[in-house]
Length: 327
Image (cartoon, rainbow, N blue to C red; front, side):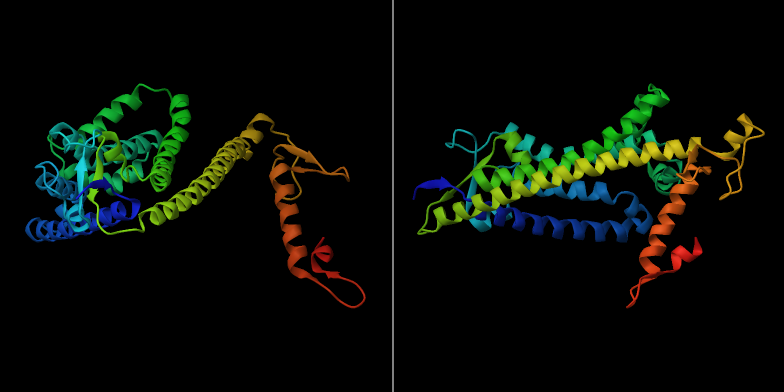
């Protein structure tokens, strides 16, 4: 029987089946390690145990040249870009490396980099302390943390503050890149996993009596177009959220610089604000000519608006405002 490219539904079904068996293997391995080593050591090395489980699953199937349980369930086989033979051992090793090991390394590096840039001593004290007890000289996380510490130590304080948004952008970009790849898969039905795209591994299936293949592909192309439009909207919202975070951070820095002690020390006889009864900070003049602190008058205006919205009651003659009486 002729071999034809697998459609989107078959690739998704195969991936879901593999994920199910991987989760079963992970749970069994976690239970065994928790029973043998105890809950404390199991919590310390849970992520590494899951990594070893995934490597074992693909090592016993893909690396040995066999079908995975999901591929066997659907009836598809891996092929190289020529579509004439199965992938070489190098391509299969690259797939397993990109699919299991590189996401683990990327996650660890980003977490360590974020903690070091923010100076998260509390986070290191609560989570990292118990990992340091279990981590020896052979621990991969220990070497990653040390490398990140050395790299961050070469940066100045200003450079650290500038790199903090970059870590957030990278974390968000990874998730958006996965969504973009899935949308392209729905449209082209070529690669469902980014690791298979990197290794150049595609799938063929045995052609059976199935006349709905073109209908399935058209349906997934429509879904891919919708997913792509949704991704564009998400990117716009993420950019807007990022600008708001940057604006809030700048406003907070300005607010911290406007401390009463700083103003009082610079001007011992500075006039006081009649709202906070402290030395005026960033003096602001109202239309009536009175001077207040910028923070005090803006907070007062916001409170006035909220009280007016809450206590304004409609009547037959006029609107009665308790906020106006308070003023």
